[in-house]
Image (tube, helix red, strand yellow):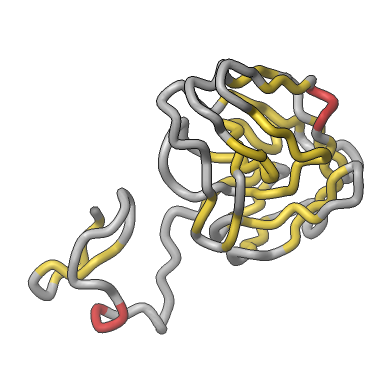
Amino acid sequence: MVFFSGWMGYATSYSPGAFAEPTDTAYARRPVTFSQPGGSYSVAQNGGTVGPAGANWGLLVYVGLFGASSGGLPVLVMPLARPVNVPTGSTFSENAAAYTLRVFGARDGSTVWPQGAIVARTQYGADCVTGTTVQYSDGAIKELALVMNAATSAGSLPSQPGASGTLWVNGGVISVS
């Protein structure tokens, strides 16, 4: 089992609900896998390269771990150890050891962390936060697809569909877009 398997993306800025990846068509997230925490550490098992940039990507400051190759919110977000400018024609490469996370929280059972929770720290001391509500269970972390509770009601949902996988009210019926 792995701690996380998905895609790694980069952004020029981040705030909850907004991860600003390059809009250049040459940009694509790269596959990444993190080992299951040994002790409390999880290490990226593969490095990779993104680019070459077809247009200036600007100064990349954040890295996000995503459950999909495009769209959606990151499962985890952390600052890059060293922000990097990626001008037109350049690539950006990292080795596997670039990311070692010290994971906090439960080691056994299951824990749900809300968006913005600090769940790990990088080897260079930066906080790693959840980009969306996530579940940590049996040593693996993943996006929690749906959270329903007593506070969830049709009146609290939008009346128009949003991004893929979001809830909305369709003529009085709760629907998933």
